[in-house]
Amino acid sequence: MAKGGFPGMGGGNMNNLIKQAQKFQKQMEDMQKEIENKEFTATVGGGAVSATVSGKKEITEIKIKPEVVDPDDVEMLQDLILSACNEALKKAEEETSGEMKKLTGGLNIPGL
Image (cartoon, rainbow, N blue to C red; front, side, top):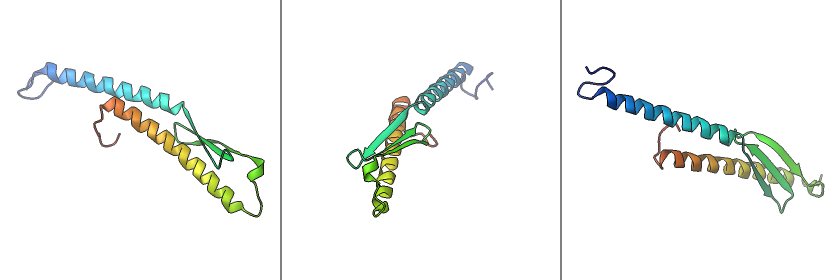
């Protein structure tokens, strides 16, 4: 067996493959750190409720305008909060997916 490779393959090919994999891994780590530092905000109900999530997909802030707090209609407020949170999470996921597609050239790599 060739040193550092597989039978029939030059060791240089394997070394190049390893270097490419390491470069790809570094790019992925950098992209993940960049996204984790971003915030994604969604506003619903004509500005009544907004939710902000981090790139780690953690809710970091919820803002509610006082005029939408109606003790007789708590369900509406709950729906607005859910909608804002889900929309902000969707924005974070879309950004992550878009950046991943750029990095992988559109290839669907399982586990990424």
